[in-house]
Structure formats: structure tokens, C-alpha cells
Length: 424
Image 1 (cartoon, rainbow, N blue to C red):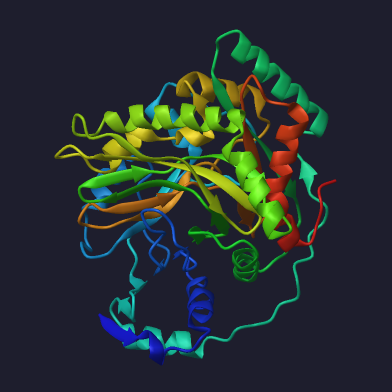
Image 2 (tube, rainbow, N blue to C red):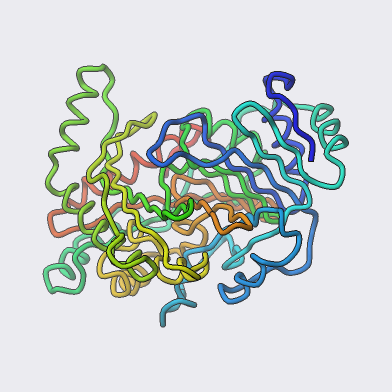
């Protein structure tokens, strides 16, 4: 391991490190953007590996991979939404233009971890890695040229789906359902590292990340934590409630207060908090599940978000796989009750969610881990030129279909701006 004072690194070191790392078949980068967040943001961490033997493909296999050599390295990877089918008696039949593996984790051959004042480089040749990163060129590609994005679900169909969900709620099928839609383009050529850096600059978030799995790329600007375990506490911070930022300080404060006092948004948030409390109770010490913050309001570049914090102490012997089986997929991206909501999601949506509304993160050998919710994210298949993002909103009986559609477009704003395109 090599430790270097941050003061000895050039200002563009992170950019050079990511450009260097993106040349590997397996790359995971986690970016906190220096943001203050309850419970803390991601660690800044960069991990790489060359093409490796087949990693874990199921939750059962993941448990063994977490304790296999090298024991000092973090395991970095993702769990797609479709792992729900391993946890419950569910299926995924909608089309996908992305085809991620359902679950993927890798043990890096080299990883970099930024501490408060130093950078640690771990691996067989840390000095050589440092030299390679310093020598990495930073090209200046032109802005991405992306054609108009097409909607997998036309607006009229989305509005009809919202109306149908409201009927389901009236009939007692669910209390709330998170309805999502995909926008995509084909035959797109872009530089994933450049687009991620543009997205991260346009929409800095505490759980941002870049992932490469062969020709698949995730460019993530997520504001939401799914799970974090810092012994003995596990926390989850569901986001439910969104409103645009104001153009002036006075308008911004009016927007904040409007969100705080919006009964529909508060009801959405409270329903998911109750779901998360029940999920965590399945793996927690009896009596330790708490809600230290309810309806917290936090500003991001384009939106205010309503965020609640649920925490508990894990029972002895519980590991990451146990926690995932108890809590995945996250309630903020499904609805309540969760299983029926997922059945209806499959019925109404037109695309397989895949990595969208899954999670991306890292797990340490000591049992601590950190995972985001994969939202506000671009996904790209370089081999096919397929570019996609998905957005959604929580539907309750009080939902107005037009307002829900506008919320989807608000969440898409940063991605559309970065791509320099519009929705056709």
C-alpha cells in the first residue's frame, strides 16, 4: 500500500484516475462530491480489475464471494432490480435493450481510497499505478451528439397507466406504486467518462458513481442511499417527495415550504418509511428500529427532496446477503405492499428495469457496506450504441397524472441537459 498526501496530487488527479480506470473491463468509482449528508455520503473509492472468472450470479453465490481472497479488498458491484425474482416468486418479462447481469461483484486487483488528507493505493504495484495515472492524458471530446430520445411509453399511455393505478388503489390492491418509464436512443456514440464527468458537474450528488462491466456503463448521479452498515448501526434513507428549486432565494424558500406542507408527498414518504421499518425489523435486534428524522428536506442542484432516515442495530450473525433478502428492492422504488406493487409494476411498465432501481456500492471484509439507489442515471451499451435512462414517480390515489408526468421530466432535466437532447 502506498499513501500519498493529497496536497502532492494535481487538481485533475481524480479525472486522470477515472480515465485510467475506465480502460479496465471491471471498473467501479464512487464519488461523494464533498457534500454534507446525514450519515455521510459515499467514500471516494476507485476499484479496477481485468477480465476475471465468472463472479457471483446470485445472492447465494454472493455470500461466498464476500469472504474469498483477497480478504483485504472491498467487493464492488451492483444488484439489479430483477434480483427480486430470486427473493420472491416474481418474474421479469418486459424487453431490455441493456441486458446487464442480474448481479455482479468483483474483487479489485487495484483500488484507490481517498482519506481526509491522503490517498491510499492498494495493489501489487501502487507506485507503478501512480505513475500511470499521472501520465494519463485527458482528452477534450466535443459535447455528446445524441439524437432525440424516444419514449418506451408514450405520454398518453403513461397518463392512462397512472389512472389505472389509481383504480387499483381504490380497489385495495396497493396503497402506493412507483411507476417508471424509459427514454432511449440507438446507434449512439459517446465517451462514457466524459459524459459522467459532465453529469457529475451538472448534478453533484452524494452517491454518484461510474461503473463499467465490459461494454456496459452506468453513469450515476444518485441522491439516495439505500443501505449503509457502520457497525452496529444499519441505516436506510428513502426519498419520497420532489419539487423543483426556485430561481431566487425567496422562491426557493417558498418551494421548500410547499414541499414540506404537501400532504400527498408526506403521505408517500410516511408509507415508505413504514415499509422500510418493517423490512429492517426482519434483520434487526428487537426494539432497535428507529426513525431519527422524518420528512427531512435537502437541497440539490435542481430539486428539493424529502428524505427520511430509518436505522436499526443488526442482529449477530446477519450479513449483507441476509439484509438484501430482507430489504431488496428498496421500498421507495416499488410501493406498498411491496410484492403486489412489484406485480403491478411488471404489468404497467414497458421496459425491464434492470440496473435502474437496483443498487450500486461496495462491501468491506469487516462487514460494513454502502449502497445507493440507482436513479438519475444514464446507462449505455457501447457495443450496441444503446443509451437509456428511466425516471418515475410514486402514484397514490391523490395523484394527478399530468403532475406525475411533469415530475418525471423534472428528474430527467440534468440528464437531458448533459446529453444536449430532448424527448421526441
